[in-house]
Image 1 (cartoon, rainbow, N blue to C red):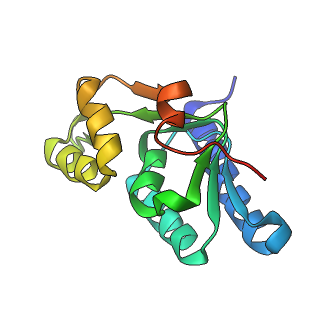
Image 2 (spheres, one colour):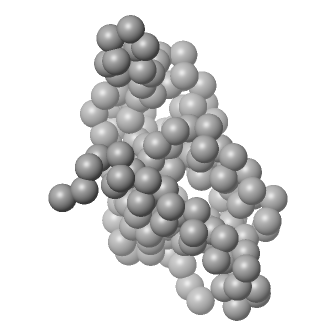
Amino acid sequence: MRPKHQTKRCARASLIVGFWLGLLGGPAAADVWIRSSRGGEVGEYLALFMLVRQSGERVVIDGPCLSACTLVLSIVPDDRICVTRRAVLGFHAARELDERSGRLSPARDATRLIAATYPQAIQDWITRHGGLSGRLILLRGRELAALYPLCTR
């Protein structure tokens, strides 16, 4: 089993490599695929998804897109996002690292800010499912397909 920090790096690298392959592959490979992302540092995802937004590429969510990965919904226009039957979006409240204790604690202001950036339909779904907390809530299946189109080639 990999150490936790290596697993996070691999998931993030998978997303980044998929993005760059999409850009370098030309029109035939013009999609950015998210196959598995457990999230990570918000700043890294914001920068990455701003590049995706500027590229004009379509985003295909084809597996777990958890935590900071869901910021794709805030940055990339809805009409450039599609999902497959394997897509899962996972949301939770923001957390910050307490430098003294080394523990994660709730970041209420950041949670409110991030939640406000999601499209209204996502905000409504989150509210219906109890809001953002330390518990991961998953959007998938029919509920997800009602909000984003299924990908077609």
